[in-house]
Length: 200
Image 1 (tube, rainbow, N blue to C red):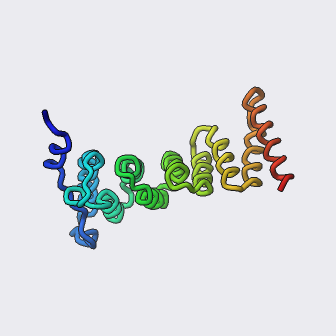
Image 2: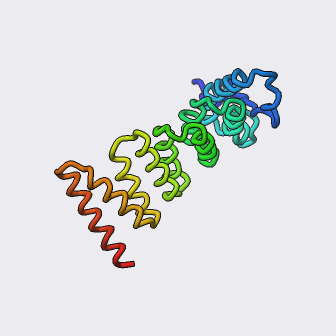
């Protein structure tokens, strides 16, 4: 019977780009970035499955170093942030590296709601920073995300202790909400927040 660990061990041997390689592109920045991106997507899954205590086959933070170098070469390569940061977090458990890549990507694509939304999720669930998650979620809501992201942002502001801001977000939602259960739910949540504010 084949041993998948052994198979992967024999197939995978990746190296992170050496320090300073982003200065040795000889005018082929985008091409070099593309090669690094392809290297990452080709090996990320195998490196996630093969536990390598000595770092011989998949060196520590190989994925982050590869994507970070690619972002220095081609900061407009959106796939690095939209998909690479997610894979870095989910497959390789490098949440800090993923957060850094999202931050870099959002400097280039600040109005991309999907990037803001995915970064918000990371900051909420993996980094445990609901305040930053709330800011990113509001940015996503302001740049085209589904309407319910405002409500979610309000909950995040409440969780991070920003009750006044949470209240303003909910009140703004309430003004534009259609009559029905959704508007009633908003009214109830506004009432709950008002009680919290009075009790402070």
